[in-house]
Image (cartoon, rainbow, N blue to C red; front, side):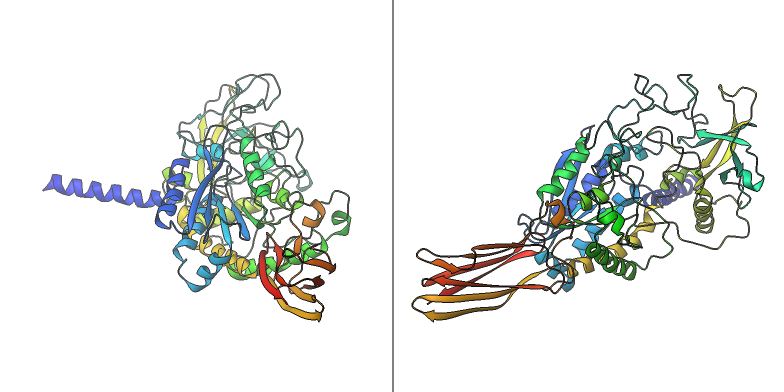
Length: 575
């Protein structure tokens, strides 16, 4: 009996552990692939998956197409995650949104949307970097599998991280030293801040990522298995010579695969990217000094107005508040999609640490075991060595760190490892400690926290789809003028609530313009009017009228529209 009770208790314990871990763990690439393929099996008439390329290490970049007749080029939205390797939550959000959209496919609103629109879900654009979360040694990694010489000394990977306290993660080292530039925060002793001489502060700690100086060059962990940061490798404002940016823009197979897909799919109306940038909570404003330059780096007036409109939809549908300031970074996909590919482009982290009241004891240790810590994550911070790893705190990290700790304490989540003294070969005779924020803690909550966020973002993307442009042929008339001559007239209307495409599309010329064409039958000819008209984007509710004089009887076909707004066709018979 005792043995049976022991086994039952052990089984219950194991089952309980699995539940906790299933709420906390993010998928590796194999698991992600399995979820996508399961959707195509369960929803065969609505979902199909294709590999648009492979990572440096040979992992597929999957795109799931959701909609009726996905092989036809209907107006579409591209939803992307996982370009920043540390942002695992983005990949999970993209997957959950696809799953939730397909599960709701029989509801009237979603069913109607899938009849006329296609949604492309690309959950992991940087799978090599994201795989580090599932590795035996966990550390933040933004770089793909490409070998890089980050310190430009002619050698690759000679100074990687080391797990000095054998806890399976790479965190932070602090060294008590009079030349140090960091101090303990007065708000919470778990936070390290840059000493401010203007406040009479003197630094106490040197801070670096966990490891030793293998190549004895005075820098720590500056050249591990670095890789290229995919979301720094795109073409707009490419950060030349920056660590992790690659040898040149679009140098990586992952970058080229994503760009090729976007450029070839000229029916993609808008792009939504999940990553550590945000132009949805607050839309960027029109600035003529940026927008009117020869090479613009600010939205046009019309596109800025559209951004405001979409931002209102986003804030209304998601209800998310207190968004942190996350400006656009150089060389990222979201900016490239707008400034180079000419698409409306929106980006959001999807989830951020909520504001919360501080508990009475902010230094109280979290109740969740440290073993569950990898469920969290760390936002990229200043001072990151190489292409990965937990980083030294930035000057402005205090407020965000305090916000995270207050929330984690309230939720009883372990995002922080207490400082433990170690012996360090490079700091003999000095007090050296390992600890601090756990890798992945700031951008990635336990997966269970993303369910509600994914539902909210599905509401947003659904309304965005409902407001997309739609071409309508109105007041189509034919009038016989005698002697075989007929007048044909029509108004081409955008009855959607958004323009047919971004205004910048007319400037970069990667977006097809609105085309109106009258196709004649044999024996017919134009007396006045052109066979084909091209015009710039039609705004919401805007229309253009066309008139032709045609000689000859028989059928004529009128076709109007563009790939991002749809193409409508009408047939009339001239007498």
